Image (tube, rainbow, N blue to C red; front, side, top):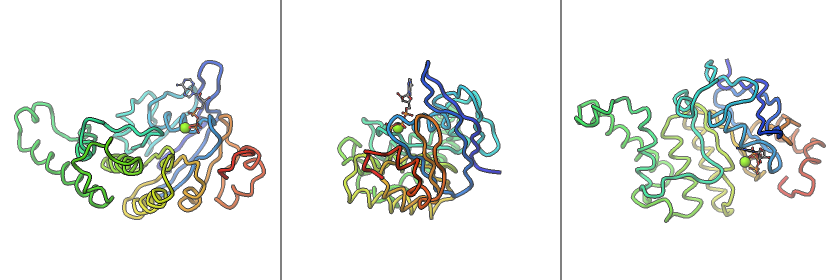
Amino acid sequence: MPLLEVKGLTRRFGGLIAVNDFNIDLGEREMVALIGPNGAGKTTVFNLVSGFYQPSEGAITINGRDTKGMRPHQVTSLGVARTFQGIRLWGEMTVLDNIRVSQHYRAGYSLLDCFLRTKKYMVREKEIERIAWELLEAMDLKEYALELPRNLSYGMQRRVEIARAMSLKPSLLLLDEPAAGLNSADVEGLIKLVRWIHDTFPVTIWMIEHQMKVVMSLCTRIKVVDFGATIADGTPEQIQNNPLVIKAYLGDDTI
Ligand SMILES: Nc1ncnc2c1ncn2[C@@H]1O[C@H](COP(=O)(O)OP(=O)(O)OP(=O)(O)O)[C@@H](O)[C@H]1O
Ligand SMILES: [Mg+2]
């Protein structure tokens, strides 16, 4: 059974078909890219899979569960974590707290436990803190733990967002343009980081990315969409030589 199964996914916004009959199966520990020109419908696919939007048609199954009607936090509890095209960190909280707070939806204690500071609460809080520090250390962010994200470079903020997603121990990680706006040193760092995550955790990674260097060095499969429709699906090699893909990107020097 695939980890993620998407069948006939379609999403309309008024008269616009943002995603049209999109299909994909992702297996455990795969690393796959979704590419396509601006406005092709890539982020909409992620918003549908993560429960931010409901499909107009089609079905999404995660670990065998149909996500129809689920809210984003319910999809998260099925093992899906994501980052956003524009970084969304809590600006008034430290890096450490950004990572701690996101784990609370599955903290496993009640509000009463929290008020009464029960043993269950204390044990779980310790565990959350431990996971946060471990991730910060492993992702070279420890020295920024007590900083506010807005005081960090863009590249570091991206790492924090990925660390926050990983603190949820996802089985599926969705990265929406993780290399956007990064300088070339940060792009190298990002490639290493994503590879390390993939080698270290039992996680399937699905990324939207315009920088072909990132896609080609990390992904074994690439799916290409244009105007909501899938125009190609294959290995990096097949995609690079596909005339439809070259046509879709004509005038665009990212590929
Ligand atoms: N909430 C919405 N309401 C109306 N239209 C939307 C909404 N979300 C997306 N769209 C439209 O759907 C189409 C696909 O948008 P989407 O953001 O998925 O593209 P994308 O492939 O991620 O593009 P980019 O590379 O620029 O991020 C666009 O025409 C966009 O304007
Ligand atoms: Mg997008």
